[in-house]
Image (tube, rainbow over all chains, first blue to last red; front, side, top):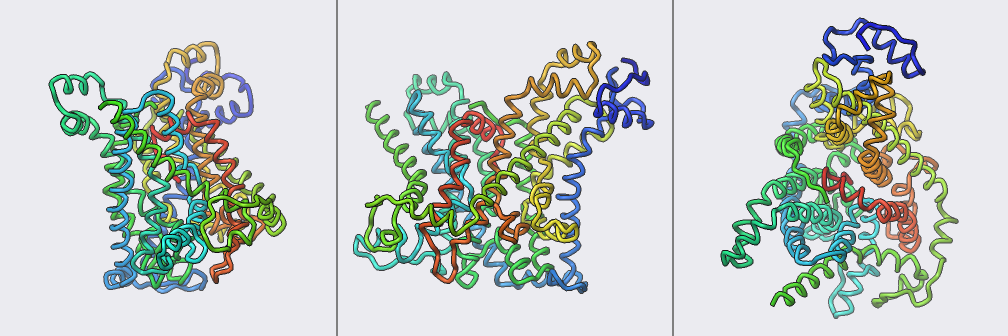
Amino acid sequence: MRRGERRPPKDMAGLFAGIVRSVPSRRGAGGRKWTFASPYFYLVPAALALAVFVYWPLVQTVELSFYEWNLVSPSRRFVGMGNYRELLTSQVFWISVANTLLAMLAMCLATIAAPLAVAVAALRVQGAVRLIYRAVIFSPTVVSMAIASFIWLWIYNPMQGLIAQLVRAVGGQGFAWLTDPQLAIWAIILVTAWKTFGYNFVIFVAGLLSIPRELVEAARIDGAGEWHTFRHVTWPLLTPTTLFVVLTTLMLAPQYLFIPTQILTQGGPNQASNNLGYIIWEQGFEVFRVGIASAIAVAIFVGFLAFSVMHFRLLERGVHYET
Amino acid sequence: MRLERRAWAHLVLVGVCVAMVFPMLWMLVTAWKSPAEIYSSGFRPWPSHPTLENFVRVVRDAPMGRFFLNSLVVAAGITLARVVTSILAAYAFARFAFRGREVLFYLFVATMLVPFQVIMIPMYLTMTTLDWLNTYQGLIVPHAASGFGVFLLRQHFKTFPVEFTDAARIDGATQWQTLWKVVVPSNATAIWSVAVLFFIDAWNQYLWPLLVATERPMQTLPVGIQIFINPEGGTQYGPLMASATLAIVPSILLYVFAQRHILESAVSSGIRG
């Protein structure tokens, strides 16, 4: 159909599309001969939602970070860089940064190195059994993090919880991770690791499967041992997968910490388990310091932007495999 | 030697499987125990007298039907909205050439990179301004679009052969009809995969409903069942585990039946819990 030719619209949507088109549109929009409706018509619903509920709040977060405000008062006080200056000396903030870095480091071991090792083991197993293992190991991924945290709250219970019972059964004394300043953050990390292990495992299995078998077999025929084959053939070829998993984990780890922290410890005892996933909530909705909370949000966003951009580049290049 | 290696692999895998499933099993075991047994000392791996008592108390003491309904409405609403907005935008990005396409596409997809916590305070303020607290629209509309959905569907639409859409066009179909009658049905598998992922993600949501649904009748399951948690130490673990069991059932069923979809789209993307 030629551009500009009018046809009776076939339905309401067609009518609407026709209206949109009849707005004098930019010449050359399309280049194809079948420019019927404006592409912008298709973009509007998603664009509207993303603009109003992602970009606009992002701008507002930056704005709020220059004010002192308690969330409810009609007036707020401009403090310029005051909130950011306060962050530099805020003990809670630096505890949170330290705990988040600790969690990221622990997650590298628990949800990158360990799943890789298990994925290598899974490749030794052939057929339907492997699919069953994979399905079971992935299963915590579909469980709500909140529900998972409720379950672990019960397991961690210092009196009748499973771990406490087991510790007592072997003659140990009590168990109170959640109220121990040293251990509370580890209780949170464990839940997060349990919940995210399976996803990374599945990615690694897919990555390993995508490595051409001939290359591995060739190395074996040349007399390379198991470890050498892994080190010099499998590992280099797995690099894109590994990079993807590392970046995903590092990028999402702080966000994943929020729910277990909120349910298990509320950042306690005495801020010992606070972290960057939880602190914005705490400052904003528990102690009502919106300015500080927003300044932290901006700091986190800027801090993780580098990870995010690298992650996106990888995603775009199409580091993904069929299962 | 080879056999021994494979035995080791099985041992490791079985161990990991047990670690993954065990917490969920423990939830089930607790849900079927009587209060007396739950709070007695000593390790009891199995309920000695399985009882429905906790489930009865859950249904009696909490508006479980209402929580279920809310979770279902919110998850279905978010899924439907995200699928539709993603299909439309992905189609525009895949099949139209227009000025600003690249920039717009990056702006859409970049929304994936914004952590929710970073924008939640202004989002909450928007809800109060609109008077959307404790409403379904407040729970659904802010999640109506997904940069990830647009990204993934565009990949599929782009690889869909142009000949098919051109043929439809020659037969007189409008652009709009071509999308819904040719492109969407042909990419049904990909769209279902995304939809399943969206549904699980929405069903599991916690942070946003916690902020928006402050009144009991509007709460979704993960938020609502906290009725059984008492920070002062009076948490009722029996009912908590029973209600957690009920809340998990839909996710697990969906996982069992749509496993291939879920694993595939998880691998090609990233599930966001």
